[in-house]
Image (cartoon, rainbow, N blue to C red):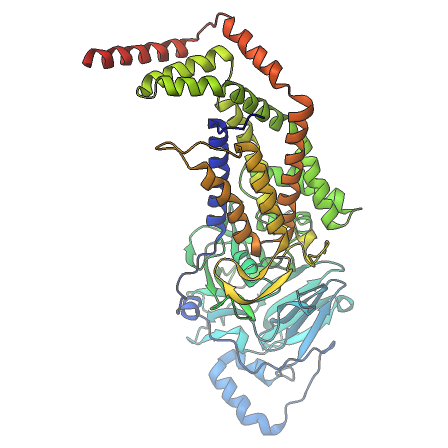
Length: 618
């Protein structure tokens, strides 16, 4: 049996695939600059009070202020000016009020009128703890402003008066200057909805709030860890914001300290599979965005992943504050986000351009269809089979090209030997042979390039597929995280402290595929050409090491995909393609007069002229 030889088609195809895979993984690696020690100063906010009482009552508790507190109230009046009135009310206690529906529970504190607990009721973390986006003082919401008597106040330090309305579905929190003069936070939560209507408005404060100074909205969150892999979760934890022009910007998982002078429609603090978003009906005229990495050592368990902060300016309208906002506390699920029709689906990183379109219009709808009646792992396998069937014509053309190059290999070797001392002549004669035979080394590369958009689209799909989160398959207990068949007593750089089986299987399948394609006995690499043996061993090793911490669903796809590819290649080789017929066709093509195009004629003339000049110098 004739041994398979290396051809230029294989070189170009595999070099491109390896380069693209390296580029994607390089760009997905998290950049961790030095910590920004000026985070608090940048946002003009103070640290969150360390002693907030964690009460989760379902109604408002009112307490009378005793006469013994009169001295403290007088002091508050002196320090807070007109807003000292709020400290005299019975609501000036660190009590809380709860708003909740079937999917979301919010606890709002009298102090600051802000949300102090946000729990997603249908989800659990990797260790079966309820998913909290806000809890235990990890978040702060504050309006910073200056009064007419030059007092700088922060609403997070002041007490609001709560009032439940609309059968308990809405909550009014009022920071009062007088009975009919106040700053109000109005929360409304509809049934079975992650979106909270939030109105920020004032009444009668045009004579209290300075009209000449800035009013800033400061919002910050320290993101809780929710997933098994700290590295993987932190990689997809980032700030995103949308400009009024519908363009979405993001940090890419890295640290950030950035000012924007463009109008902002929404800001999202994304924690991989869960996201907190502040939206506005009237765009903020600019914004400041800060992202700070809190993971010092990924080998050690951590509570938080990153800290996010944003400062957004508010504008007075007729001397009053009047902003129509919304909060979203929910999953980073493309289906859920897309339903709001506010461009929130851009939070899910599906890839840019054609890669995002493939995910949006084909892969996501088709996977949703499959997962509607199949387990997640089986749905991934059927998705893989469907994609390979769709791409099989492309693979067929690629294999036909490889078969033609194999048939021509003996003649190419003869030319290489005959003109081994004349590279130009060797190139000339080789191109003539390709032209006569109707073959081209590039004809196999083009089909390989056609598969790259699907390859990259799927590389983006699996890390963002909320539907595979905590879905098990075989030995993998969560397809959105790595699978584990063995724990290591030590940590290996880039590899981790565990052994995942799906990347091992995918690596073996890739190695077999590359062996079938490039051949067992490869020629020694020529100067300037890549070492194909090195590439053949590097690609599976690359998969084995770096995919050990990736989503097992992605490794399952690559394993299944390469198994199917191997099967298709064997079927094409043994049952579809007849190399004798290809050889006969090539010989027939050689005998036919070949009409050269203008480019081919010009190229031939250039080669002939170069050859004449070279001979003249001898």
